[in-house]
Image (tube, rainbow, N blue to C red; front, side, top):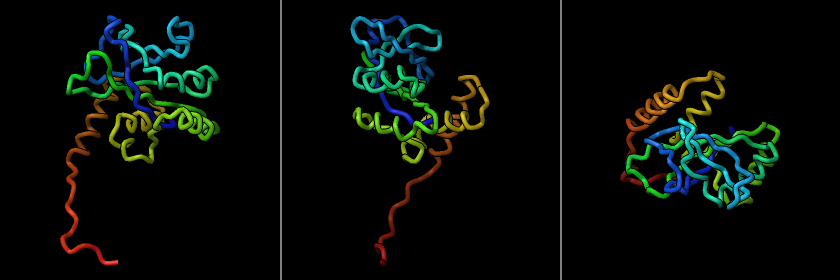
Length: 172
């Protein structure tokens, strides 16, 4: 796993598929889409189409998918605020072969996307940390098991408390 990018799922109003809270989603290339040759459609766990990945992200990822340089998977984080009825944020997890890491990273950055890798603070607070741990263990688990582990990880982090700096300042 190289890392992930945050992308919006758009066009929700045009499809019957829905997402209820935290859910893994299927990301499927749709090169014959009449409106966008870079389209990546989003399917919920019931394989109903929910929408598409926004064009700005799809235009960067689609050529890499078509060249078989990357594989992508999506997770919609828990949207407690209800989100918008027109778009939902999604973590697009990007997988590639080890020897392709630098090439793929360069293409993603050149495309203007922010890649969140395992050395980034945001990575540790996301669902991606659990996905990476499960990939390393090579144990296939159900979606429910993965999200139980995510909840457990989030609860651990919630117990951490930020500390105030000392009043006296620092000595150098």
